[in-house]
Image 1: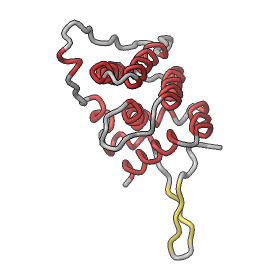
Image 2 (image 1 turned 120 degrees about the vertical axis):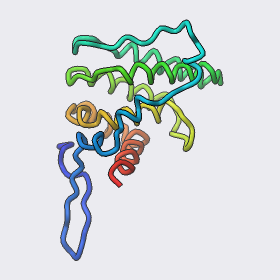
Image 3 (image 1 turned 135 degrees about the vertical axis):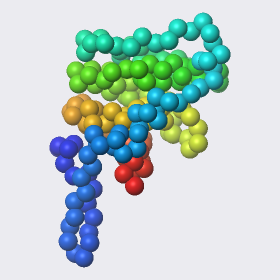
Length: 176
């Protein structure tokens, strides 16, 4: 299955019309990256001892453990209802993703993050800022790169539920 094939079709006066979504243009349309990066939180700002995350500079740098450590701390804090820790973990993951350069060779880092988050958290709660919302927004502006990795398509197909639904909802919002 090709992920660059038309994703939706509609019928008008009996003729089939194909609608092709160009994921690399979604960022230009909605300023998704700028919107993601400009998010501000409160816990991280009040914790003056926390150094800023280090950006990656080369495709050889594996950030899987960095992403997963933040996601695991978020899951722990959510499970035990430690709200400030949950928010701090979310802020740290956001801060890291916001400065991260996604190289084609490193899309697996994000796929591992998505796999963990969707296996260990609950469905998106409307109006609630949570880790699923965060990673879905990140996927939104990096979709052009992620869609080229067959492992991303495999993850969406295998999950087939919440992840697929969240991505389709995000794409629908961006294209409408």
